[in-house]
Length: 387
Image 1 (cartoon, rainbow, N blue to C red):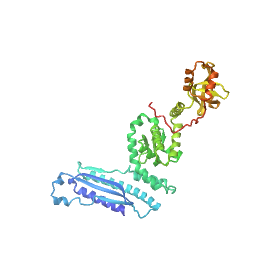
Image 2: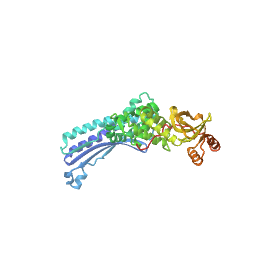
Image 3: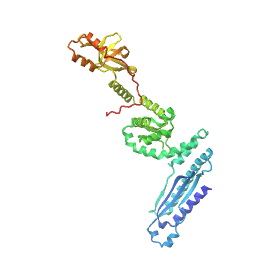
Image 4: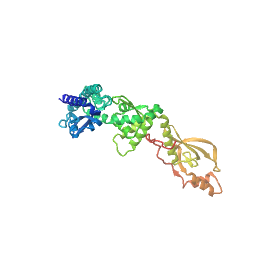
């Protein structure tokens, strides 16, 4: 019955518009999806803007024209039923409305172009790109087997809600895409398949962090190509956030992106963390070490090797407390004690007789057992120093 009533609503006003065309400057037909207290509906609006001829009519004459209600409500669902089949009926009603509106709008255009004055403005809202109808069609086709019944409602609502904002973000991203096309290398579909993150969750991050994107798909958003650099910045922000229930997945995704898309940045981040660790490491250049074989050596440098293992390059300390020319490399496991370099300098500056045997005796009460916490790479820590 709604279909017949809607047709009657529009036919009535179209004919009235044509009958009194000399008074009309503009005709506007549109629609709006809405909800009130759980009742979902589409409000169809039909409005006219009168011209100067109408303004010249008497008040009583004006009151006899264009008095029909300007809106019609096409019901989709009520709050009386919450079963899943009601949701499916609502989507079918949306598609029904789309086809009906297309036919009625086409009829209106034909009639207006044929009978209205050429200077009359005709504005009819198109429905071909209306996200509610396009996603309704997509979800019903996807749900033919009924396997998505438990999630269809929430996913549909979120897809529709995000559609316009995502397209606005994509429009803002056009210049960046033109310059940095190669960086739009990961897609929301890839992330969804690999990590199980819902598309709406991925897209929420893109919107909230203003990540540049490129959209594939016209009537619905089928896939989003994401700027990889800006996306990892957004993930880092989410990981550090006080809230969020997907932090573990975000960390896995963060690591995956660096391993597969940002290899040079990954190496840079590792080098940064290693450099930061060595800067505060207990052994520094100039320190004196006593090895397990009881030799006394002086540190030339501290370095990382494969698997984040620390090695020490040293020179033998001669009897006159000068460093030998040859250097060798050992692991920290070969070191027993350490004397800090500033203590060694203080010692050499205060004695007159410099001999290794005297240093060993002096060291006995000042040397420290080598203890330190091994280096642990944080795969989510990024070097933010200015480039």
